[in-house]
Image 1 (cartoon, rainbow, N blue to C red):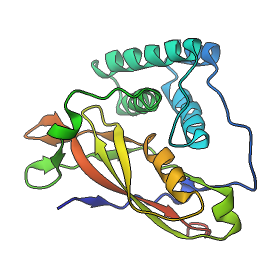
Image 2: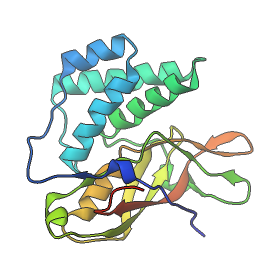
Image 3: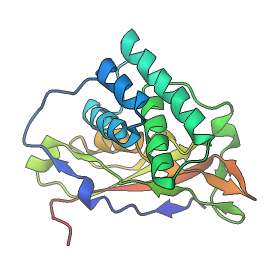
Image 4: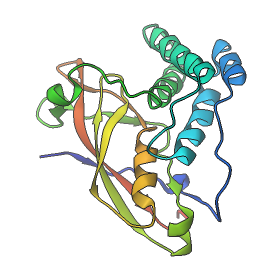
Length: 210
């Protein structure tokens, strides 16, 4: 049975009054931030780009791709070292957000992914489950929850998202865009990191959090 995790994303819904220009990756600025180890800053910038671009990210230009692939390698090396938890979490967010721009997956991901339960410990969410409230849904005062199944891979990144229960007016696309930027501490089995199938809830509400 698929494990459900209820991620309350109150702080995450960005209600948009209308279309806004999509941000773009600025290679020089991103590279400078990465070289100075400002992973939290880089993660925030990449997350806004992923959210506003949508579930199908445009192939990055050569200069953008170079800095994103550099970010992937830099954060992988960083995560192999010993660092404070806060810095490691920010680096893992940069890793997953950078990987979202490229189609490749870890080998055998779908075939080898397990189900949470028994000895398989569930992945733990890192940061805030940010998502964007589509303008059309906001104008229609749409409320509800989109249920998305993903695979949380061995690096804690959400891959292969698919809608299990959807909503109209762009909410499904917003949910798919959101979860591909969500980051987790990977699941484990007997202390070994494993990929798992996981179900995520993406709530859309017009109410402010209590």
